[in-house]
Length: 126
Image (cartoon, rainbow, N blue to C red; front, side, top):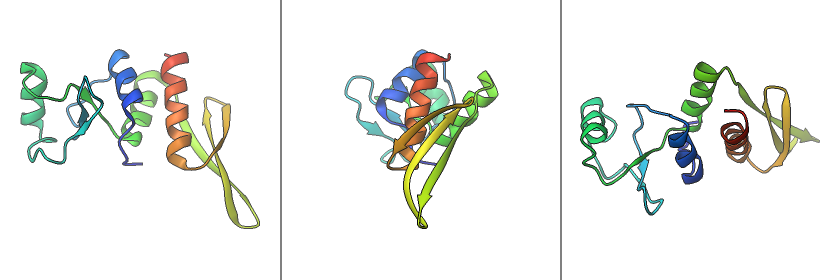
């Protein structure tokens, strides 16, 4: 999923040591306002490196995509998150997320299921 994670997840990721120079967006540290599209150079290695090292940008919290977080959790912590859709009569009725064999059910979208699993993992398993 290439949708950026929400502000709450971005803050917890920062606390847990997530660091990536590939993030193309970020939240303003004080207001939770998503930034990125209006910065044409945001996302390039040089711009982000300069921004983070010199601390000279107005966004402070990196905002990865859901897919980047799922891969980071797997590569760094060995935790895999997956999302399943349950159907009835050929129609999707709800989504569930699975984290290391623990199941969380009843979400209306895959994004909600992934975000719930990510926040649970960050707060309880790392």
